Every structure is written in C-alpha cells, then in structure tokens.
Length: 268
Length: 73
Image 1: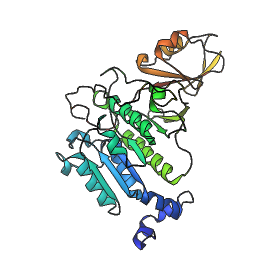
Image 2 (image 1 turned 45 degrees about the horizontal axis):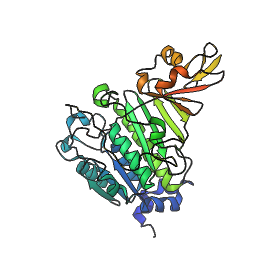
Image 3 (image 1 turned 30 degrees about the horizontal axis):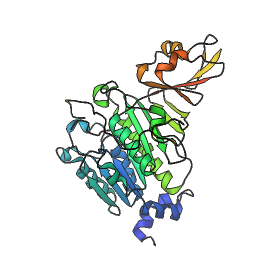
Image 4 (image 1 turned 135 degrees about the horizontal axis):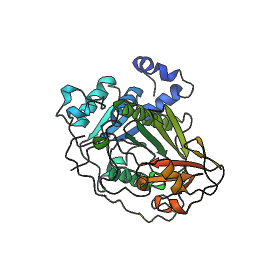
C-alpha cells in the first residue's frame, strides 16, 4: 500500500519519528481499535486515534450528549446535545480525519454482546466509568486474548495500566472484585477535573499507538498513577496474581458475568 | 525502620503493620484499597497481619472509575 500525497502530508510528523516511520504509519492505518465509552476518557482518545490515522476505530456507548458532559468530553459540542454520543463522536472524528473508518455501537456492553463487539479489534480502550463495566471488559479481553488499556479518573487523580495477554497482570490481578455497589464514589458523586480526562485519555491513546507500532514500552506490569495537585506521576510495578480468578492457569471465572451497576439519578 | 510509601521515605517502628501504616497515612476508605508491598498484593482484610520490614516499598492503590459511560440502564 503506497501513501497518497495527502497521507504523506497528513502523517508527516509521525513518519519523521524513527519509532513510527512509514512502517509504523502503515500499521496504524491497518489497525482496528475499539473504544468503550464515548465520555471523558474516550473523547480525547478517539480524537487522537482518528488524527493518528488508526484505520478503523470502533466506539461503543448508549448515552446521548448532555450539557454536563461538555466540561470534559471534548469530542462533543453544544450543537450535539441530545444526540447519541457515538454519532457525535463519529462526526468529530471524521471531521478531523476522513481517511479512517468509524464504526459505532449505540449500546452498553454486557456479558451477552461484548465478545461479539470486540472480536474484530486489535486493541481495546476502556473509557468506562463504572466497575461492573471495567471488570467485564477485563474478563472479556482476557478470555478473547485481546490487549486493552484500563484507566480511571477521579477528582485530581488518574490511573492507567495496559494488559497484554501472557505478558503481565490483568486488571483483576490488582483489583480482584468490583467494590460493593455505590461504595466507591464515581465522577458524578466525587467530581473530576476536566483536563484529567484529557491527560489520562491521551495516555490511553498513546498506549494503543505504542502497541500498534511497537514503539517503546507499554504500561504492562505497571500501574501509572497521576496526582495533579502534587504534580506527581508515579509508576508501581505490578505482577500477575498466580491465583487470579480470570487470567491465571486455573481460572475460576470462565464465563462473563454482569455485576450490578450503581443507580444514579444524575446524568454523567 | 525506613519504608517507602508511594516513593516517599517514611520512618516507622520496626514491625509496624500495614494496618498501622494505612491509619497513620490516612488512607481514605482503606476497605476499597489494595496495598502493593514489594509487588505482592495485600487485601484490606490482611492489613493487620502484615508486619513490614526495613526497606519495604508500599503503594496504596485505589479503585478509580471515571470517564463518561452511562451507568444506569
């Protein structure tokens, strides 16, 4: 596949990088990345992956755009309020880069649809805000042998890790089971500074780009934590839990389960 | 003894337990925190039985959700 002149110009800053180059850019154009959640984390990740020329980007979310989203979900604008988030996201991504294909899934992920949705993708990005979804994404990716990047944000803090099958721990190795329903505050209860979603969502996009191009090291076996108030990026080494219920040699979880999701009366 | 908490050097009495450290460090909602001690995961229920040693490296890892995925269907 030869680049068109427009592609050479569009991706020139990537092609100049020795870690990417023509080869890496071709890999990006041939890659398929699924973003689950078109919210705070998914918004910047989707925009940068579209801009990077990731050939196929899937985006899954059942929500519509709400005014309270716009403080951090930068892929949507006031003109999109009331529109399905995946449609709004698709329009912005294609406005940035019509060179890519965007597939939308206007649905929430559950144990009965996630395996079908992620089967066609090379890499998955967890941009969800709740633990049942995070554990479901983890378990589905482990079972399907798909790499994915987890992220969480709250207040002025964020965290990030990347699972690659056979190369390090999964999310469940570290966090084991979902916390009791409503035990841990979500963004809507605790608040989150908008730019935190940008920082951490962009780091997720970078993990996807590094995975696809093979550039550098991934956050595999590492949990990155960021505390904006203390200006502190901190990385913790994490290892596979030999007793992990899903990714160990003797898993006790062998089929996907839907945990109870928290009840909230506010739209995030 | 000297231990390291989130990369910062701290002084504790020899044999201090993880529970004492979590209390002293004012770990918020420790029930929902996993401790990583030298790469081993310690559940909150075991905090009181883990005696720390000189040079141990401790991290308190919190559950973090976030993003913008609708949660109620």
